[in-house]
Length: 385
View 1 (cartoon, rainbow, N blue to C red):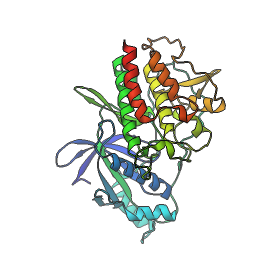
View 2 (tube, rainbow, N blue to C red; view 1 turned 180 degrees about the horizontal axis):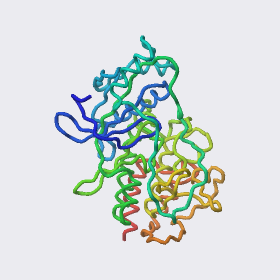
View 3 (spheres, rainbow, N blue to C red; view 1 turned 180 degrees about the vertical axis):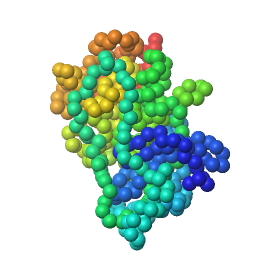
């Protein structure tokens, strides 16, 4: 690793891996390095999905996080770059067979070898907490819908100590929550986010990629002299469809229930098959929250997050869940919510109409990603007059 990259500090961690800040040894360029431990076939499948999606997007769109390279770790000191289009066959074998390949040697010897590079090993999940505004409404106890292959522990017996290391571009502005909520309200910045993310999702859908977990946490920000650039990241739950050459994912159906509560579409909440239009619903929730600075606090955390919702007494209900229970529910856009702090200029009539369409309980009534990109530009332009 040291010959290629240096690790500086941990940036964050999720359910499946940990991200470090690092540098390319030869050039000194700052990068983000994500370690994905390959201990379980289900997790390996998610890692390969992320790798395939990021290779497909390559560096062809400014609003998609760029993948520089991928390294395969097959031992404590054995790291090698993977060439483009090449996929580790033993990882595919693990997914197909439902078990990780065993290696010869005792567990104690394996432990001694892996302990020699403890810096490269994953640690237990310890989510950080941030201060938040006491005026922000609270979310009811969480029913964790992002449950796909989650909570996987170590399996018994000796296992191949391997991991995938994804080397990606570094974004110095944090995620979308951190960036927007740490700055004064800015209508121009809000419009820029909406336009850039619309363009990113149109690009993904035209490649046959459905993200399936669009939310502010999965949008990273690169601060540049000409302004912030917002980049879609974290493709662990994404799906690719090579059968649709025209990129029309509205005909391709998926069945795995995955995503994050406040951004999941009604059909996903209901356990039905769904299409790429579920991504459009997720964007609708994000856009509404961004344009009106609507936030909530997830149960069990103190971190304020962007997201629209429906109030049920003193509790909050995700829009998708509420629309699944009542498809005729009338949403109130702009949200009639009095707050102690200043409220951004509410979206105009054209933008409101677009949000209503994006958040329709009927997936076929939502605009496609290509239509959305065009309508976002026209709606913001029309409302500005």
